Length: 173
Image 1: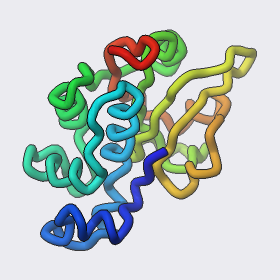
Image 2 (image 1 turned 120 degrees about the horizontal axis):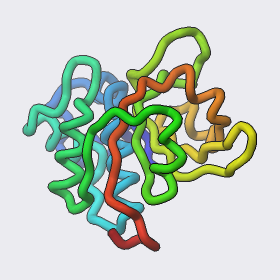
Image 3 (image 1 turned 60 degrees about the vertical axis):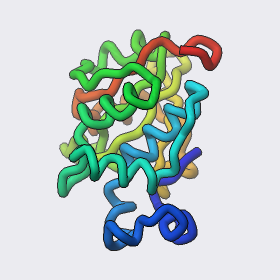
Image 4 (image 1 turned 30 degrees about the horizontal axis):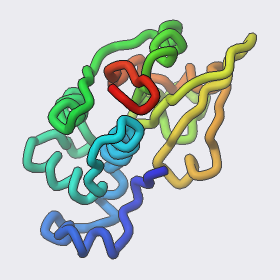
């Protein structure tokens, strides 16, 4: 599990200090921490979050609010995992999860208050049922203790935007 909060040691070792404030960048690193987890799942070389951040800055992937989905997809493809940024309706998520993990845009901590998007997490599978349980990897502090969530809880905060990946077959793409 990768965290979006970048450790001071990692920040210093990989030259993050050249970018500015570590905590400020950590607040926008959910997509890059998610990308790192995807790279690891596919058995690819996985740069640290700081290294991915520097690559994202170089390639203009980041905005003041976070990473562009198309930019993350492009980085993933460049790093060996074919991907695309695309709209995926909530009713299509389970079918997508049958073949590969998906990074989705949700509201952090999945509130049911009308907000959607702004935070990227990985959906990595599900358990079917009347209200399917999604297996998630959330790089935020909240996500360190929340690994499963009902689809009915994710749906209200899901923005309908996702980063999809090539099929994952036993760790091989």
